[in-house]
Length: 111
Image 1 (cartoon, rainbow, N blue to C red):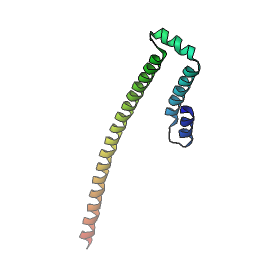
Image 2 (cartoon, rainbow, N blue to C red; image 1 turned 90 degrees about the horizontal axis):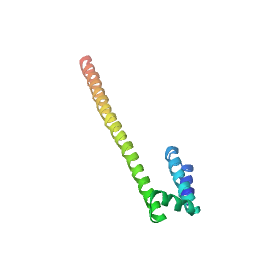
Image 3 (tube, one colour; image 1 turned 180 degrees about the vertical axis):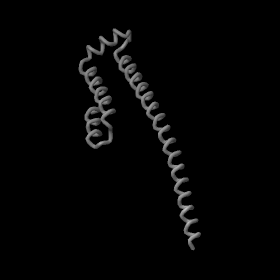
Image 4 (cartoon, rainbow, N blue to C red; image 1 turned 45 degrees about the horizontal axis):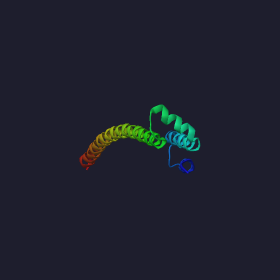
């Protein structure tokens, strides 16, 4: 269901391709671990987990942590860009007001 949902979001242009690949790979990994339960048990024994469900929760937690860090970096970058754009817009607005006042002054001088 997750994979179909992701594909529907991509088709409707609700999810960018850069994130779609990450989510599709995650969906495929979950599907493989669910279908191939022996692999999940092997991975669990390799990391020293008592139960395979613990391994799934660990991987889910790590995945969410990485996604959170990634989005925090993106939000920080976007915040800086918004600040820069706002400052530039204020500067341009000030220049426009100066030009308009110069035009108004010239019109008054001509009258």
